[in-house]
Amino acid sequence: MTASPVASAAGWSSTDRPAVRRCVGVEPDEFAARHWGARPLLTPAGGLPKGFDDLLTLADVDELLSRRGLRTPFLRVAKDGAVLSSNQFTSGGGVGAEIGDQVDDTSVARLFDGGATVVLQGLHRLWPPLIDFAGQLGVDLGHPVQINAYITPPSSQGFSAHYDVHDVFVLQVAGQKRWRIHEPVHQDPLRDQPWDKRADAVAARAQETPLIEETLNPGDALYLPRGYLHSATALGEVSAHLTVGVHVLTRYTLVEALLALAGRDDDLRATLPLGIDAADPDQIAPHLSATVEALARVLKDTPVDEVVRRVRNRVWHGTRPEPIGPLAQASAAQTAGTGSVVRLRAGLRHRLREDGDKVVLEIPGDTLSLPASTVAAMRALLTGEPRVVGELPDLPVADQTVLVRRLLREGILVPCDH
Image: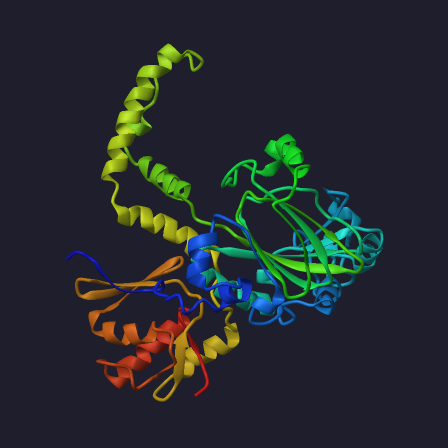
């Protein structure tokens, strides 16, 4: 029997996307049509639902740098456009924590006082409010995200004009920063096309009249598609902003998936002749022609589902779901029963499909095979709404308990209050 999809994690309407709405001052549909991957968007604080104090403050930065045992590469320090060696701001952790690359708060304070910019990296894995925000934004966008924080001393600039190979949302959390935005020198750069490979063109473009030159105040937000040049200078006080990097899927992502699948073809794996001169176009030409012909055949015959599976895995593994407490989760899996309330783990990517006498649930890194009789109950559980054991459709209460306990053990469901 041909497998048929019956549920998916991707079914959000434009009225959802709460994390996107925190970053842009237009409706999500308008943002998608006019700005996404195309043009910058600057939104003053008054055009957004609320500020960003709940995500990060300067006091939070001090806590991260002094009390959380950070190690490299979760911290970078830059000055005058150059990244400093980590040995200038790390040391051992003391008795019982003799790890040599822990952040040394005294050294960071000295460097910051001397005009260096502090960059906290991977905050979507470190700081609870940003873990939650990044998880929701990744779901809203359908593309994996990361979050860094840039903290710059008064009247200082951390990095010279450059472009990123991912889209960014800049969220100003403290102080003021003057931003200069220029048109791209290379449209839609890929990850292996960084700005330093075009340093001369970037430097020349940075001398031209900016496309945007504005001061960001706390609560302001700026969206920049990849490739747009940008630089920022703190004004008369300490400035801090969050940079949300969006690792966008592109058509080249599909090319990469196709090429990976093409490696299964016998003709494309064939060895070239012994003694071939790789520098001679006349010797390479016939093999290139045969390769192009074979590749065209393979690409034409590649099922969409196989490409989707590779691209899907890239996205699913790039965005982590809601954190769970291992102890509480294990306890819930042991004790769940009639009356227990559970819900889908927020941000968990999944796909449910029927396959013969089974229903198959695909999640990042795993596949669960369940009896077909559970399909209605699974559909109900995967909506994301809280569900009560004993009230799931088309399944005996005893079987509901077995199903829910298994899904709790697999980290698919989480317990919630009545």
